[in-house]
Length: 410
Image (cartoon, rainbow, N blue to C red; front, top):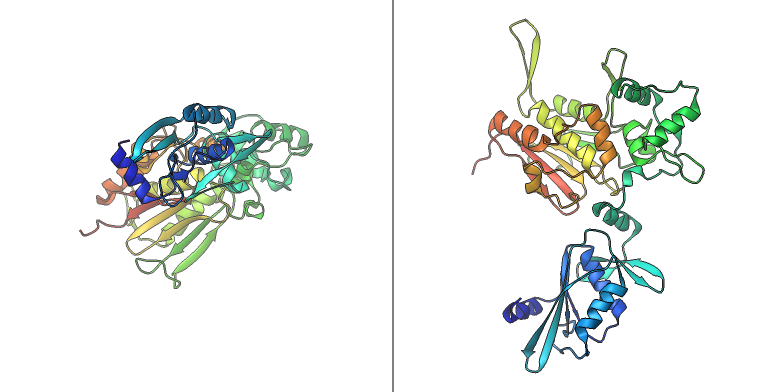
């Protein structure tokens, strides 16, 4: 960083990636700011600058050694920051810049044998709520929400019919008789559909989402809010509103036919009855359907991705499926995981937030083993259908997938 760049940084004031401090702060206060930055997207602490941007200069002897010691003794896992001093930013006043990158794991301050996590929210570094901390661990790969026990649930809250179909038909393995509760418990715990928790065996989040009798009893956000709007924007006078609820996977009969829809099939049926479907007879006299507005495979892949990869730690919102006059949007709660960006999605870059859910949905044939559904099915499918390019937009704590009914006029 040049001196000119530093002066411009100071002139712009504190923000989500910049903090001003005197160098008289204690090592715990410095560690707090660096941890908060590392738990977001990285940032800089400028020592020798007042909160209002006034340059007071650094005064501490052996400043570099003090900073590196604080990062080693007060931060877990340890951070190694980039450090530099800019001299005479104002006559006789030096400013130290301490820069950290986004951490690969969740960092915390270690003080008096206690761990304290911090996150950066605007210009403030503060302790996270329990939900924010869980999301941080999940983003850093140190916490799997989907295998967390759901308090108050039990084997009785899982649909034995769907479980039997999954293990016997889909996975083609032996399953215990219905009366063998111990055998079923062992099977479900070993496959993370249930878990051991203080002598009990509650269902996991993934277990209820996939196979629950009524997932929304315990996970009220586990569904899809489907809406049809008459125009191009959201409108109270919607043509149809349907809360789609139930387990993710469908129930099949002995002939391999669906007898009870899962969440994906419910969403497809909603789109089917609210878009144009053309029917014709093929050369053998059989009725064939063509989805005129949006291809069936594109709809299926878009919904499957939302269900499989959404952030289930965000408990205040469902997946949104919205049909407008000119487009279809699916909004999935949560930021993209593990460094994935919309641009990387378009090229087929893969990272699973909910590995167990993803694996089970892949067993049912919802997901490709190559994980190339976005470029192969969604992007190529829309280009082949009507020449439009789907949009993937990360907007705060949500991902928007937008499909266009027809090419947009420029």
